[in-house]
Image 1: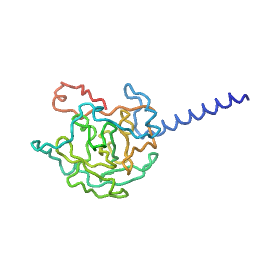
Image 2: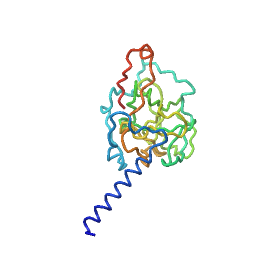
Image 3: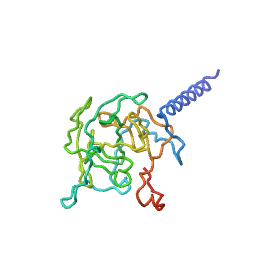
Length: 228
């Protein structure tokens, strides 16, 4: 066999294996054919840490707490009271909350200074890891990586490695990680606050729609316009 052809065949086989590996990473029930999906960005697969800017987010709000702005009331069941480093099949080590739900980070947030740019419809799909005292129980996580930011509405949100933490409403039971790679900006968070890129979908999935509000229930405003 000609050497050049042999090399081409080897490269082709490796590329095919890589594609199959990525496709095989999708969790059970994962829909990779939802709408106009595109390939996951190469830099995400390479594991390069993003350096986002505040203006990158749609409708980004500042996180400076206003003395005249009331603090949003957070129900006790919505507080994140425990963070645990847990190993999941195919994904490796992730961070879960007290209910076993996988936590995520958002590439459009900032870390200098630490701030959340997920507000309005975004936070309905990606509920922040709210806290009252900033002192959740930690299992397998370095407390020096833990932090707290003040959101635009005055609530407190936990951070790891200065990245704000979130749940995903598309995960309907503990141990799922259907939010991995959503919009090319949402990733499962590792115990050090970095993106866990062990397993990525072969195409970029869209986020689920925000919960219907009263206007939508009345048959109006059914298009949410939510895009990430």
